[in-house]
Image (cartoon, rainbow, N blue to C red; front, side):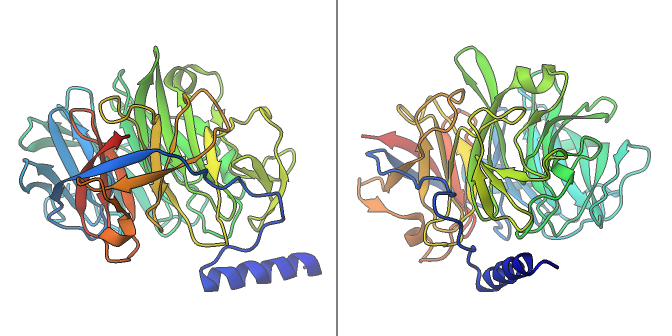
Length: 417
């Protein structure tokens, strides 16, 4: 091993053990969030019945669905969570694996069909399968349910894809208006890597956004180079629908990304957000920076560098503190100036952009949180100085919500001046 690379690897290992990110070269990190006068107010709504590993809730028609990834799905009746799925009522073909046994849930526009992505140690019989080259120990397994607003019925397996359950699993899931689904499969990697070759390899589903046909279970890759989006969100801006997502970074950049649905499903080749080694140059991109194989930034990427899509916005670590972005959420009912609201899982700080998603490399703006009395609060203070892990979502009426993974409490968010 070359001595410089060995030294770098030792620094990365030391950073991993200490929980800190290695220092990046001066000028090769994103600009920090800017101060702003943006403020949001939190209104308590309820608490999850279980909160071992909550994910972002999902709207299904007039119902709000609460997700605990340890195997529980609830319907919120306005007061309590009514169980829809528990570990005992999962489909027989699902053999729950890991801490994300029930990864995510999405509903069609009517709310009459619910799609659930499980992680199982074995796939169902007679469904299409995608194989993984990355040390798989299980399967992403998608099921379709009928939903009458009260209970789930008629579970049907749709498709299966291999997964390494201890790596970045992603999990973002949405249903498009044509009935197909988009699923964000993570790179299944570790925090000290550059994404390897998988993110740019069109033959594998890792580090991709995959379009799923629920009728026959067939899958098509529509976007490459995503690291591990845990939430995909579908919003209309102007006359276009956009898929928006936060992609947590490695050492360098936390990204807010967006693409028109028409570009994702109508293009001849997948869109490319940069993660994973470019087969021609051998380097990965993280946000607007090129990175080496140990995840350290080496150069700024040119604006609009083909074929890559620049992030809507990005920010990075300051003073090397741990950070992991989460979100986003948009709401015409809840926000006036804010276009997309997102946050940091570790510190609980909130951030926003105010430009349209078509505008790339926007400033990230800090957002102040106030209680219903208008007094400043912090999410970390609301969780007794513990890591809050905020998860963003929309209520069935379109208003914005936030759930604190640490406590299971969820709130309605509104912008105030």
